[in-house]
Image (tube, rainbow, N blue to C red):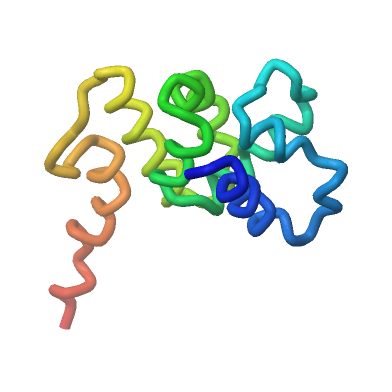
Amino acid sequence: MTQDEKYTALKKIFWDYNIEMLPLKKIASRQFPDVDKYEYDLVINRMLERMSWIELLDILGIDELKKILTRNKIKKLRSNELKDRYERIRRILFKEPLSLSGWDTEYIKRIKATLLSNRWYTA
């Protein structure tokens, strides 16, 4: 992606903000230390919620994504589906073990009530 394409992609997800007030050009050019922490967190949260993984890699780079994807940052996302996705990505990036089958303890707890329910066996 070119700088202009990155900036355009960022502008699209901030349609409801005054774009001139946000440091989108600095983020598109990867000048992260020059960005205010509050504004940076605002932009990053919106990017994580609205952009694809490929766009995030192009705009931020793998090193910045490793810094961003902490457990605290992932907890602040709105969607549980996104939280699960980014937690899985975080584990892959940091070479932590994954439950490949999807039958980890959290999933088992979530479906236990439906699997062991006796509602199907009552007359």
